[in-house]
Image (cartoon, rainbow, N blue to C red):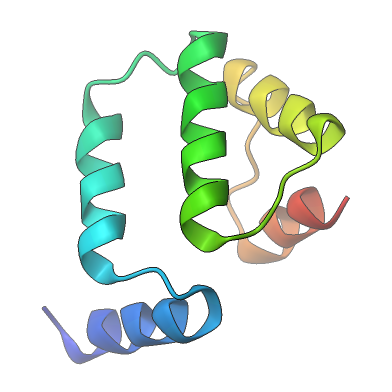
Length: 86
């Protein structure tokens, strides 16, 4: 793992209390997931919410699910932050 990656994971862990191992486990589970399936996406959003101990409202969950299903997820960090702040 590069220094950049290690620093990134350290920052994530400090802010969310989610370990790199947990992140890799979720990433592995998503590799073969059907991201066009609403139920799969909702389960993933709920899992991530629990891991980060950050509640996600039904309205926010609906927006995230819709964005993923419509393949309309922002690719830059500012746009992602705006999506999650709404």
